[in-house]
Image 1: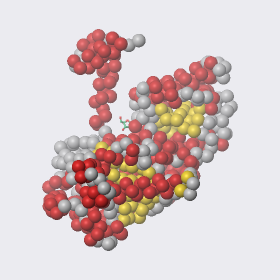
Image 2: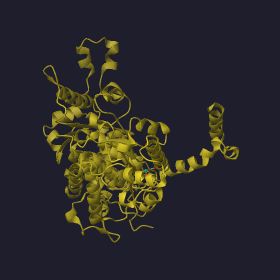
Image 3: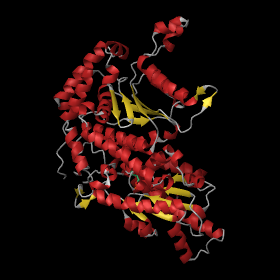
Image 4: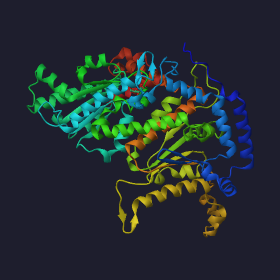
Length: 564
Ligand code: F6P
């Protein structure tokens, strides 16, 4: 059993009782953003925060000065600061796996070597040793010094991984596409559905393709299956074109030139046939969904270069330091996490929209889904006891303005309260004019319009004043008082993406801490994996079919009756 003390039951703290009383009074008096703005000229300045390059405006949330004070009290009541410090120091706060949680060590500067010795390991020194190896490798690939088996420069990277070994790299690759400066494009294969691989190899020339197999455990079914498929594709296609003769020797040489791996299990990488020289490690104290800034981000270093990866790491680190060193009262990272608790536990919110007003962030919500939901989708606390309140939020979203024409109706006028984070940037790498109109400003105007409409709505009188028939007035009323946070950056740079990820990593930590969760395990994904192994033979084997439940049996029988 871990030495971490049992979680404090947040619902039994005086801070919780005070928040409940405050919530009751606030809702009895009526949540009234319009009124609150009118009554307090300083509301916006009091609820706006600068975190590095980001300006974060919380003023359109359903909070008052008193709410913020009580939320900070709640954080203190559960020992938020102590647990944060314990995490940064390498205490095994991942109790069910008895592991330290040290993604913050991945982005510490080299000058921190020797300062974070955890379980006998100099974590920062080891991180920088791997970074230097990756940088040297990536430079060779980018410059063309690294050549494929037929002597050609690498032009494509196919990164194979799933979950944390995929979502982070894809999201960041898409976010930073304008920084891809070496003529190398990346494709990401994750799904075991053969359709994924089939589409991703289309048009790929194996002579100019580098495959990166990314798996923390190097046992994941999807990744190993796809990696074997990629191996077969590469060797067979090279042989068919006469590039290699198919001998063991030439096959091994082709694998050496075209396959590299990222894993914590370097022995299994070698067993797979990948040269240990071409393997990059990380450690058990990096959770999969917290690993994009480890060797898992190798494809990003190849695409964008070591310098930009350093900027990316700096963005993370600056937020880590901000979160650690800013008093809770002024700490927007902590406040955003605590506000999410406010919405989930007091307003009964079930989901949280994340709405980037930047097309390059189109995979951000998908990335956040694993980060937040695999971390905090739990009913048991870190000591094995049941949770004492609702936990977790469903994160979802699409880039604006596409979302506006799809699901915003429900956010504006539906019966559910959905807190929404809007993420936008002052500048665009693609400035465009439509006549005299700056298109980026048109876009940003939409971001601001949405947050305004959500907060302040439109009254029945305002609708009537437009000449609307009386019976139709209710359908056109916007209640307002729908919470949003505006996260406004300057440019979507590697630094900004690192900062944004760290912001949400720590928000997730704050929520998990209040709820008493081990946000770093993921037992909930195991049962399905076990059952898939047990069920798959039943497509062909009657004995395996016989032991299935009636529904599964019927579905397999449908498959059997219709397969070609
Ligand atoms: O099944 C969930 C999971 O364990 C994730 O937590 C992880 O990111 C993913 O699988 C991939 O695991 P690996 O990197 O070991 O292949």
